[in-house]
Every structure is written in structure tokens, then in C-alpha cells.
Length: 88
Length: 415
Image 1 (cartoon, rainbow over the protein chains, first blue to last red):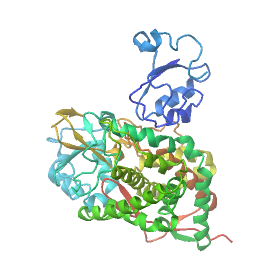
Image 2: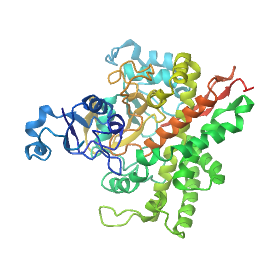
Image 3: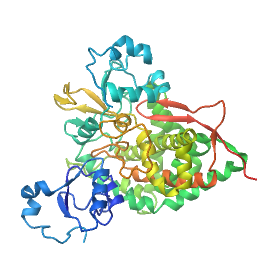
Image 4: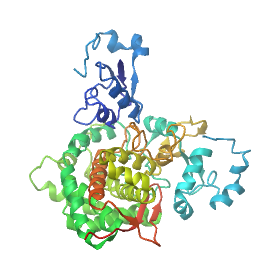
């Protein structure tokens, strides 16, 4: 499972972290550190990741599968591969 | 569930039908400050959200309130089109000083938020939970043996002020009553009196910041305000803006939290099953807080000014039009929330617009959550059974915020 955190829409609501602290990390200001990037969700964390995604009032988190092809972060290999990049 | 018919042809939405039902045509001639709206608040809001979610007001310069989750989210996030720089209050008095940064747009607003956010983050606020818990207990100690209290003046109006001023701003608590009173009147007094009360709060905070400037830095949010920010044009934020930042933080957190606390207890007093569930399962309190603030949003609506001709929720708007984002309605919008009038403490992902959406998302959201959680944990632990004093009911004041003025509670005295 791969999710994407919109760089403009994240406003630091912090709900994603509340549900899935192992998937979504917050910076000192409370924004998702993966703003503008995709996250590969580790096996076993999918349920929590989905809850965190659904709880976001900004709808800033989306499943990234459908947009992989157009995702520059993915194309550039910045966080590609089967191992988790953000949550690891 | 959602039933939106053409207001022109729906007989329920004719001016006569609405006036007969609500004492006013709430679709074409709405008024946030109407005493009738205060009285029938929940009934009007739920009707409007379900039947005619975009409503117009002719009061003053006029405004349009959008009450769907989607419209509120889209407009809140699109700050370029829906600007905060002309203020968030409907028919804003000209002599009211602007509140910074809530009445700014990015990038200047963003500079302030970067400066302030680290002091108001979830993790920082969680670290203050035990201080707030001690405050809650200190207040409960004052009246628990009496078996009764007036909840607003004896508890809810005090705890948020302590949480913010003692633990975040560091204002001496003996000056709080005056400050809280002026904040409250600044928000709910007749519109023409509000600037006077605002002025008193600004004057107090001006003196407070001047005094702090003479002291060594403490690394807190007050120092961050005093350091200030550099605006996009290269100029540093003025002294008046720094005072305004302190005022904005002050206005944001007191009356809103009072309403959330009062609404939570009022709900439990009227819903025995929900009450019993929280007594049995204190682990659900954190989740229940989300439901309380979703269903009983203290912010009714916040305004924006259109920077261009645009369409929102199918409604054409002109450059310069004043619109309001109906947070309270959006959080009870059946298009976004299943069964929005029912509170479900076991629903895991509660989504709501209570803290706003977009760059102006409430900076005190995390403080509010911790306050409300420890308040409910301590209240239900120490006064598990309570009731509304027979023959009384809570009193409210409503404008762009909704406030609870009083609520008399009773309980059986401990032996």
C-alpha cells in the first residue's frame, strides 16, 4: 500500500498521526513530514494508515496506486521499492 | 437523507413557510445575530444543512453562508480566491483592529504560523496534560461537596483561561476574570460595543508584552511573538501586529472551549446511554471529545472575501462578496457524515470541520483536545452522576460563535 500526502493541503491537523504514528510522522510544527511525497506503508500498518487517511479533514492523504505513473517522487525513485521509506 | 429541492418551487422553503416555522425566512433573510437563531439554533442549523445549505443574509452589507462540508473545505483551502485579509467577521465594525494572523493571507500569515505552530503542536500540548488535569481537580474541589454548581462560571469559564494563560502565555491568573470578561463581551456584545471590549483586551496585552520585553527571554510563545516575523515585502511585523497576535490567540481559545465543555456535559445529562458508556469505558473519552466538538461546534461560521468572480457549490459569487464558511453545519452534513445527528463514540475516524480547514486551521486545536479530554476524565471520575438542575436549562449566546452562558448542575453529595 502506498499513500500520498498532498504538500499544499496538509495543514497540521494531526489526525493521521493520532491513528498511525508509525506511518505518519509530524514535524515540529505538526505537519506531516511526508508533505508532497508518497509513503510506502509497511505490511501490518495498512489498517492504521487507512484510518489516518480517512480522519484527515483536509483530505490531504490519498492512496497513491492510481497516480504512481505521474508521481515525480516515485519516478525519481526517491521513495521507491518495497521497503518503507518514511515509516522505516 | 439529504433532500435539497429547488428553493423556488419547494413549498417548505417559501418565505411564508420558513417564517411560520422559524420566525424568519432563514434561507433569504438569515441573521447570525437574531435572538430567534440563538433560541432555535440546532433546529435551524439541521434544517438548513439538509434542505437549503446555502443561505443569504441581508443584514448590513449582506453575506452568504455555505453549510456543506465540501464547500467549506474547498473555500477554506482556496485562500487565493477566498481571502481572510478583510476579516472573518460578518459586517465587521470599521474600528475593530485586525486580528493577526487569522485576518491575513499567506505568505504573511504563513510566516506567523511557522513561528507559532511549534508552541501549539500536539506533542507540546500533550506534555501539559497533567498541569491541566491538576487545574480541573482544583476547580472541582471547590464545589464537589456542595452537590451543585453553575458549571459555566465555576468551571468552564475558568479552566480554558488557566490552560491558555497560565500554561502557555504566562499571564498572572488574578487578572484573568477581567480579561475573560472583556474577551467574552468583545465577541457577543451588541456589534457597536464590541470594539470597546476588544480595545481593553488589546491594551492589556500591549502592556503585558511591553513588560515581558524587559525580562530575559524564556523561550516560550511570548518570546516568539516578540521576536516577530519578516513579511513578504521585507518589513518586520509591527508592534501592533505583535499585540494583535497575542489577542488573536486569546480570543480563539476561551469562549469556544467553554461551549465545548458545556455541550459535552449537557449532552451526557440528556443521553443516559452515552453517559453510561463513557462511565464504563473511559478509554472512549478521547474519541468522544471528537464527537462532541463535531456535533456541537463552537464556531458557527467564519468569513472570507471573494477576490474574483467565482462559483461555489453552484452559487455564482462576485469579487468583493462576503461569504461565511459554516463549520457548525459542515460538521453535521449528511453528505459527508453518516447519521450526523447521532453521536457515536465508537466510530473510529470522526471527520469534522470544527477546527476549520486550510491554512487557517485552528492553532489551538490540540490544546483544546487535551483540555477537553482531561476535563471529561476528571469530571466523570469524580462526579460520575450529575443532572441538570430541575426547572433550569442552559442559556446561550450566538453570533459567528456559539457560547453557553450558564448551566446549573446537581449531583448527590458524597457521604
